[in-house]
Image 1 (cartoon, one colour):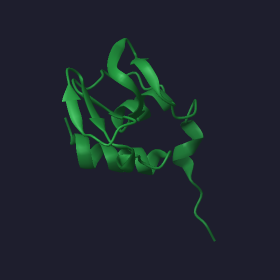
Image 2 (cartoon, one colour):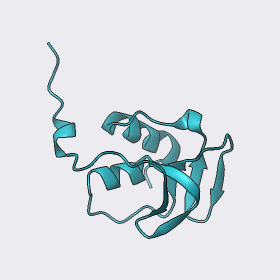
Image 3 (cartoon, one colour):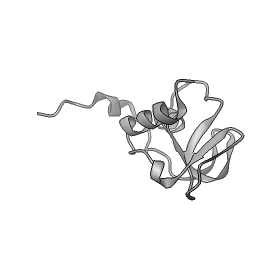
Length: 95
């Protein structure tokens, strides 16, 4: 018997696709918000944004510019709470 998944019941909207602007912050290229950014957006959390956010870019190059860390497509987390939370803790830490 599967345990019920109560965590998905509070998700307000689907995880974002590629965007150029995320909550007023321009990305260096069109990319998919990941980790904390994806969770804040999908669950419409009223929390301050982390100073540096993460996104999945289209190229196979990891880099940082301004307020963004851009990761490669191979870093793409599963599009669910567990996937994005695991990504956030692994690549973005606690701060």
